[in-house]
Length: 297
Image 1 (tube, rainbow, N blue to C red):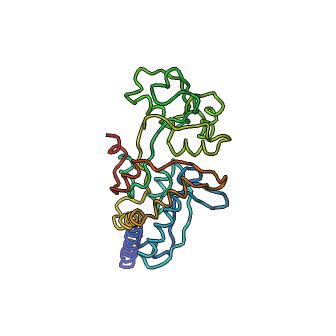
Image 2: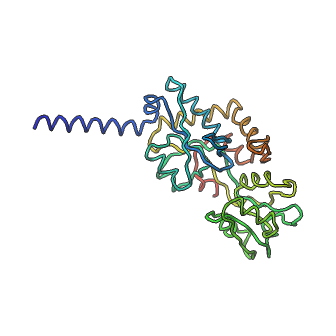
């Protein structure tokens, strides 16, 4: 009986220790000497070149955060690049598979119930892409036009909810992915493509004639993008936030933005050509982890 009781106590202590480490990421990565970085296969902020190589603005920023985390725990950390999707990214952070997710995740109130977000490092703006010859310069010019967007996204819903779109009737066509939606515009089957500005700019930059396209009109929605960490791990979140604030303060994050948005990038060696938005500049000037709802009041 005493042996059984002792075994239960030992098991309980082991479980408590495992739980404590699961909610103490700094202790976890110090003990293992490794960290799992959540990345995306195809995003304007994080993408793969194949053969396990991941690059992009958020990917490289995440690597710099990890360098700082290594200094904080007193050892260089090995990085495991873990690709995530829109469907599994939150569960993989919650269950400990991913320690730091730096893909392209919008910080919103619903997600804050399940995970924590680091300081906002990119502010996405939903915009309109069209051909320079279309005569479209804003929402009002979409009347009677055909607007493309991507299946599973909410961009056209966002457009329809915009007060300036009241009474404007347009036809909606859906692409199966962002490349397909852009093709609808490029081939003349759509007059405009409504989506995240970085996605619009990236697709236009890879086209046969990038100069034929322009991003126009009003900002339809503003979405703060940030790295995800496990909830209720204040020490780890602070360490990540401290690194982000350091990168902002010393100018290295601005140089990183220039590298990935204004200079030729792999694999096609073309420029996305998307200058930093005023919303992103403001987020850096006033570091915060506010959800999307706060940005769209």
